[in-house]
Length: 142
Image (tube, rainbow, N blue to C red; front, side):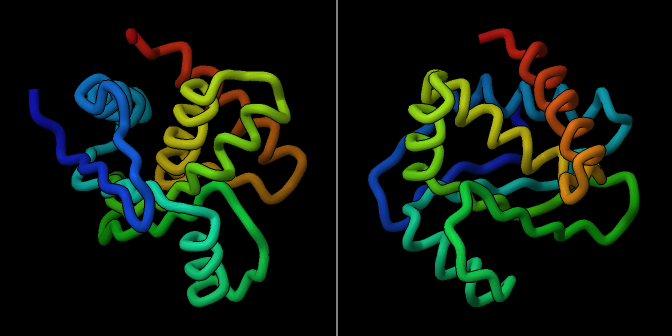
């Protein structure tokens, strides 16, 4: 099945393993939350690239692993652009002692959860986000 999800890389050499399986998993998570998947674009990039987006669009002069832009015009639909720093994902995976693949999938679904309405600014929101990430990760079949 074809899903409205695209994966690109910008300013780095990176190719997502199992893109069809990842797309199916993302679509499953969106459907589980009762929303419609319209269009998702993932851009895998470097720390420098994502930092420049963070400064330009969000006025944050910090490194981050992900920036999510919600492009949905209607409630109940998921549409957005998700930028992921492969550098940050790799460093974070090492720091917390997990595989690059598992950390990448956590970050990939983190962006989707933001588009589904989950936030992570407060301690309570962050705890719920982690619970949703874990629940979503358990749905992977690859």
